[in-house]
Structures are given as structure tokens and as C-alpha cells.
Image 1 (cartoon, rainbow, N blue to C red):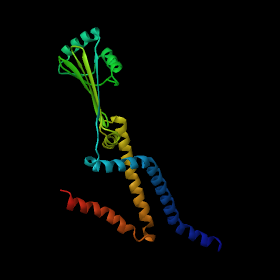
Image 2: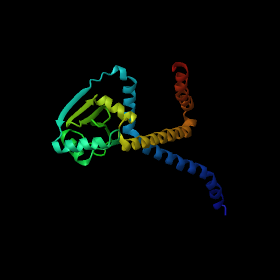
Image 3: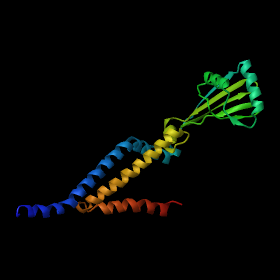
Length: 220
């Protein structure tokens, strides 16, 4: 009887510490998983945050490419008829015209909306770090122009999600959730270790107060 008494009283007192250890282990697991998910993207967004903040100081020399082509006669008649029937509409090129455009210029216009008038079809092709467009006139003349502003501009547009498509937009959302998880788990881990690290709360408070003070005093 005497041998079982101490162990039965010691077990309940050990439970809170065991639960704390399990909870802290879970926090560390979610912390490193979220940091692994957002590591590369965090470096990219940190770098482009700097380049965006100094966009006026970083010179960009746009490179412009211009190409011209001529529609074959059968496609010219098809374009003229289609333009006449779809004036002021925004619909993609017919499949034959789209295939010819893809062969004549380094683009893929299948499914892209074209702005139609009786005189021409104009297709805007915005993209990260530049711009492009195709114009096909009813007389058969076709023009293509592409502008590239360099890889820094490309990275900046990736940061902003500008003309990057739906998949990259989903990635930004997932990355944002991972960053929130990373920050919250880091905060909770610091909270658990704060008793042994007296500087924890002053540093956290400084990190919260500093942006607020700068915004209130220096942003107008």
C-alpha cells in the first residue's frame, strides 16, 4: 500500500507539465513547417519589398520588340466579316485566325479577349515585367509589340501579383496564410520561453510600437 501512494499522487502533478511539453512540441512542428513553406517566398518578397521601395532609384531600360506580318487572303476576308459582325465586342479570335497569329508572332492568343471594331481586332497581352499587344487590321496588316522592363520589374510585378494569373494568386494567398501561422506560432513559442528570457516582452513590444509610431508621426 505504501509503495503505490506516492506514485498515485505524483502522476496528476506531472500531467500539466506533460501537456505543456506536447503543446510546445506541436507549436515547434507548425513553426518549422510554416517557415519551410514560406522560406523562399519570404526571401523573394523581402527583396522585392526593397526594390519596390526604391523603384525610382533603380533604372529600367525597356526593350521593345516590334514585328509585322500580312494575313493570307482567305483569312483576311474572314477577319473583315468577323469584325463587321462583332464591332464593339470583346471576344477571342476565331480559331483559324488565332492559329495564324500564334505562328506569325511569339504569342499564344487562344482564348484571349480581343477588342473588335469594324477596322481591326486588338488583343492586349499584359504580363509581369512588361507589356505586349497584337493588332490585326481589316486590310490584312498585323502588328505585334512587346515591351520588357527587365528582371527587377518582373520580380516587382510578381510581388504585387500584377498580370500573373490565377495560380500565382492562389500561391500568394497560401504564402500569406503560412506567414501568419509562422508569426503566431513564433509568438506563442516566445511566450512559453518568456519566463527564462526577460528581454522577450520588451523586444516584442518594440516591434509592435515602432511601426505604429513611425506611421503616426512620419506618414502623411
